[in-house]
Length: 62
Image 1 (cartoon, one colour):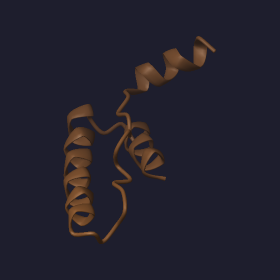
Image 2 (tube, rainbow, N blue to C red):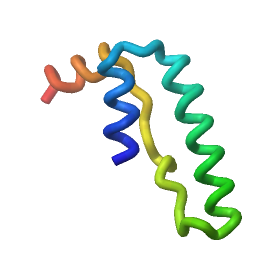
Image 3 (cartoon, one colour):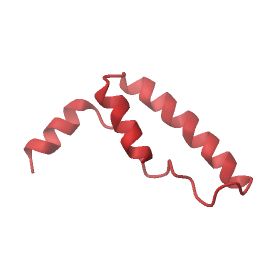
Image 4 (cartoon, rainbow, N blue to C red):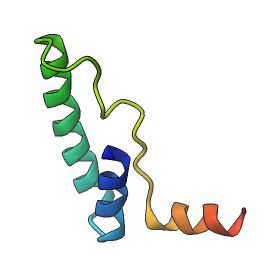
């Protein structure tokens, strides 16, 4: 679900840096919740920030 959110931001053509800032903020908040034992694992871990160019390239190579 979180990966879909990040991809949605990329598709809305937010700059890569803006998406990185949003991701860093979410990651830190979820990590704090994990440390406080409010959640078991950080759902932001493993999410990839790609650019639209990378998404198009990946689709054409399949």
